[in-house]
Image (cartoon, rainbow over all chains, first blue to last red; front, side, top):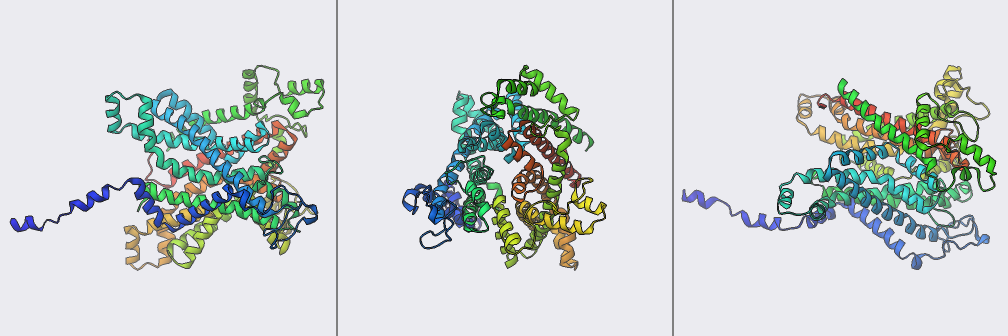
Length: 299
Length: 334
């Protein structure tokens, strides 16, 4: 008996230590190990820096026209060449990062706020409130997203602001549904019953318990939504329904240059590459965040 | 299964009604006087009054909605302001062009995507796996319109291999019967035209098919990897079955279930992508139809075009759900 008791390994302390690590730190640890995710994060940071410091980095003004220099191929003076008005494409791509990232972040922030609000109300109050809001989401999701965006812009008129609103609207149901299902699961937890029992108000429960519990999936979905938002903004710009000239929006740049593709292919090459790289960055980062934050995806 | 189908169909009614209402509200949500916006600044009072009456905007909107709805039930999609032809009469050729392009794009996406996914899973961590997955990652992030432009520049202009725009040779157009040119050219016994139609389909088909192809490849790979770790696959290999058959017969059957869902979802999304692809390749489809209507402010066409595409989108999603239940007997619906 004595021998048996002696052989029991003292396994308690290390486990306790591991439990002390916050879930966010643990997520960062697993995110850091994911090479593709780090590549994504670097691309995203790179474009954020470019957008923030465009004034210092860009060699020329984005709207500076110099007709004598039109359609110059890439050279040491104009690294990405010039467009049909002699504007420096590198500078326009750099300033364009501001527009694309801006639209991405702002529209997704709008979708998150409106979507979360509707989703939480639907999930928490249930019954007819839930039915109405959920049906509304179903109807919005019943449209192919770019089509809904086109419809919104067709009504409001073409402009960058309206494109941003359109993109925000099409992403609302994504976040609404996410928060709703989140609320439905969390609502049944014992600590929510406990919170109710000690007399916490609904709004306090929502803000202190339910929202923090939904943060991880919002971050994951938000990152991926930024990627789609950037592509959609570019698509609307390309169709002439987004940013208007002389704004150096990447999609609009493609549309304006396409007729010159034969003489000046670089005018089409670089804005497209910029869109693709930014979107790739957000996609890689989003995938990595999902693996790191969503325990169900862990192997 | 039967009651499930019925339930899904009834659940569709409020969604379709809601969609119709949103589309109906489009023209009424225009800030200011819609007739003025449509006709422009120089419009006379008389012309504006006439248009307001024609669009029914002078009546209370519940009446308008009721008329719009009953019109749709009898196949009346309104009249195009530009061509003055009933939309239900002129929409079909455009719709057929889009369906043909989408089917070809999906075919390309499935054939290449599923096989790339299978081979990637089969030879996990090989160079093929890495290359395929990097290409798939880039493919997902590719703006369709840019890919289309690059295809045009490299394949059609630089190499002069394929035509840049259109559905057929304009100097020798396909005589429309069903408006599916692949079928029509054969019906007319014109094999040369059939080849020509295929040549026109390749570039837009690839542009439109790239995103679903990438997603299908990734999905097939992960789904195959999961299935290939299961016991019955080990048994199949242990009894000496050739790897090829283990992969293509035993694993694929079970791995395909999630893939089918993805394929269905992507088929719906193709409709959205088709709009962009069509504007690049001058493809006379529904996307071009809507796009041109926007520049003419032809709101009845915009409305009906969007409604038709959205309705098809909803129906495809329904079919996918039903198919999903039919393929996997393990799924039981309450």
